[in-house]
Image (cartoon, rainbow, N blue to C red):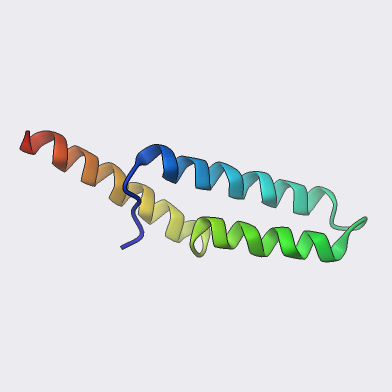
Length: 71
């Protein structure tokens, strides 16, 4: 449900969300509205909360492991 088709795509979404969250924290006093927008964009990139992203990572890894054992 939360997994991605490709592990690289899932990790890239996580990296983008981490960068957006870091930017939002650093610039929260200088640009409060942009920081809020960056936080929302990070949640969109994660497709929910960080725990949802982690569950998706585990699903993506298990799907890849399952596909490799079938071959």
